[in-house]
Image 1 (cartoon, rainbow, N blue to C red):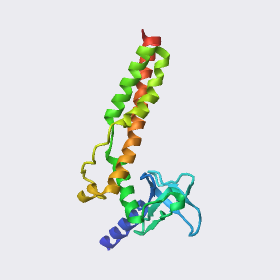
Image 2: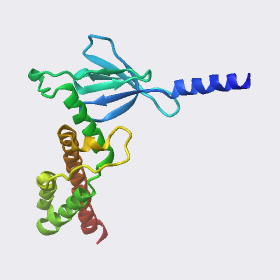
Image 3: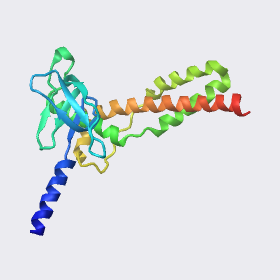
Length: 204
């Protein structure tokens, strides 16, 4: 009797914890509850909070969604090969591309880009005063003049070692790595320039 009751409680808990995984075209993922009606152009996404409450639903165009992995174990793929909409990769190619994007979101950090942006943000105002702020957008664009290194194998349940040699996986990885580089360079530039003006006009 006790074992039966324990099993029921565990099953109920797993049912509450189980959630859908929404995977965007750019590799970003969201955890929550997805409601979709076949044939619709949009889906409804409810983000679940830690206390199991739900925020207001967010409407998402299906063109921005690669796939949804439901808590039931089923997967619905929204991506379709369509040359008119610039969806030029076949499903198996796009699957690896998005997997590479997800890998970069999770494992690529680009700390050097932040340091580079900070250095540019500091140097610009020191040399050119107010006009030195122009070095921030310069750092944003210049940071990707350097090639992105090949992805390294990390302990990731979704990625096998041979995936790192797949061209589509690497392309997806590098695309997100470049975006994260630019974001880090931008924030680094803002921090660097801000620290100079803070020191110059408020502290000194």
